[in-house]
Image 1 (cartoon, rainbow, N blue to C red):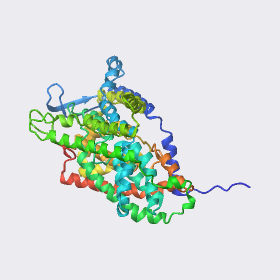
Image 2 (cartoon, one colour; image 1 turned 135 degrees about the vertical axis):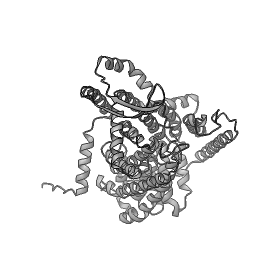
Image 3 (tube, rainbow, N blue to C red; image 1 turned 45 degrees about the vertical axis):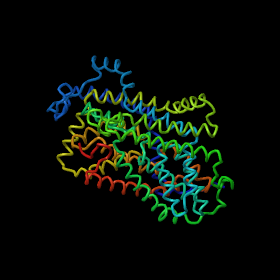
Image 4 (cartoon, rainbow, N blue to C red; image 1 turned 60 degrees about the vertical axis):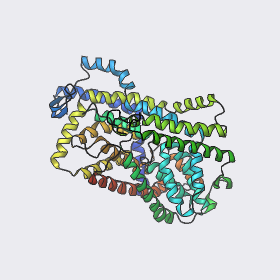
Length: 521
């Protein structure tokens, strides 16, 4: 008998189109190679038609802002080809995000490899009262963004087990954890790996107009701390009022997992001891850092001004400090549990952490060439000047302009999963453009992060989506892409709306985005 084909609904048909379109995109490394070639060709065409723009720009010689006429530099000329050949190495080694991301990876890699982060997550949920379990799961999802693999690989399946232990639907627990870890990807109370990564790319974008501009990893810290509160509240309400009622009472007969897998595993005595000791060490280190910041003559302050923010060693060294804060407690945890038996094991884990960055290093090499060419041709400045002039002439309210940018980033995220890959493309165009409207690079970066995070949970192109779907099938074998998307869609819409509202409020009140960083320049 011929099998009757099941008619797909509108949602599944739409998702199929998104998946097909996204799968047709080349690998990010290949994509940036194509973009670099495109920029070279565009520089030839732009120079041939004498494409130019005029505006007030920082003169790199006199270091003063003055009216200048900018024309396109042809990189397919003799001089341009010499530049391409001789700058290739310096473009790569000078790529701002490269060093900071690799350094942070040492600390986070040790925390993951030792089991320190996983133990901290398990301990937290095991002592949480039932009435607080939903906000705690969402909150832990957000906090797990410091090491995103932990959020997806550990917390999402753990969310299902936690909810089942409280007689709740396991898919609701997975949804709450997934919403925090992926939908709230950019929110956090701490500085994570995504902060130096994006700020480095933002710095490259800002330097198209101002060669001295630096976007610090702490540039969005205050805004992202407030975002953590908002996302936790919104995620909790959506879970309790929409997702759980929709899923209803769970039928345990649908589960494809053993009884032991359904139970929240207890930590061993040695794991509890290791977590206690390493947590005390971490707390002592934080107290020590705080005490070192107090003296007016502290080496962590700006030598000239005494500031802890502007030009201080604390801000300039925040990445090494974060790495040390992860590294030391993780090594102690690993030594007590026996994961690290000697310094050879520690060194091996450091190497293993770096081995996972091979793909990023390849991407950084090609992306750095693209950004360098884009800057050298002056195409970015011309687009920024013309774009800023157009946006200024139509008089869009700056907060509304940022909301439109948020929506643009959220739509692009449906077709291109990597946050860094998207930002490498968008930052050189939009940061200088909005700088021309007096909007700070940090503000543009914050708006991008909202759009990029909110739709992570509804695109099948997100790297960990297949893994989440596999976890879900363990508890309901009928779960498909459409099921997951329909479950996560309320989170995506809710996050996008309320996060954008927070952004508007922030801009209207002119609140600082981070230490020493404002909404406007």
